[in-house]
Image 1 (cartoon, rainbow, N blue to C red):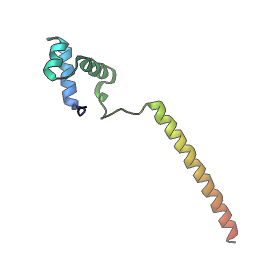
Image 2 (cartoon, one colour; image 1 turned 90 degrees about the vertical axis):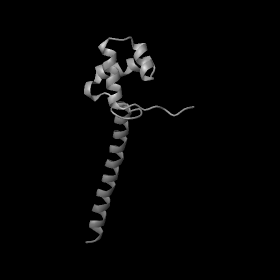
Image 3 (tube, helix red, strand yellow; image 1 turned 180 degrees about the horizontal axis):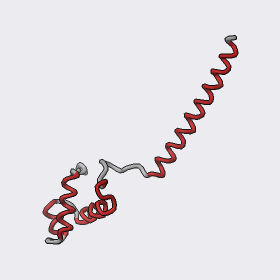
Image 4 (cartoon, helix red, strand yellow; image 1 turned 60 degrees about the vertical axis):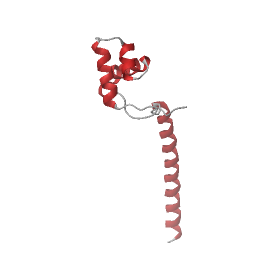
Length: 97
C-alpha cells in the first residue's frame, strides 16, 4: 500500500475555488489535480460548513463527545487526588502538634 497523500491548506482552498467557479466539470478538475472527484466535493462541503476554519489539521480530529468523556474522567481523577492530599495534610498537621 502506498503512502497517504497530504494536501496543503492552500491547495485545498484553490481546488474548491476552481470547483465553485463552474468553468469546468469537476471530473476534469479532479483529473488535472490528481485527486478523486469525491474528495473535491468533500473539501467543498467542509469549506461551506466551516468557512475559514476548514481543514484544521492532519489526521482525524477527536469527536467532541469522546473528548468530553475523557476530560470528565480526568477531572474526576484529579478531584480524587486533591481530596486525598487534603486529608493527608490535615492528618499530618494534627500529628505534628
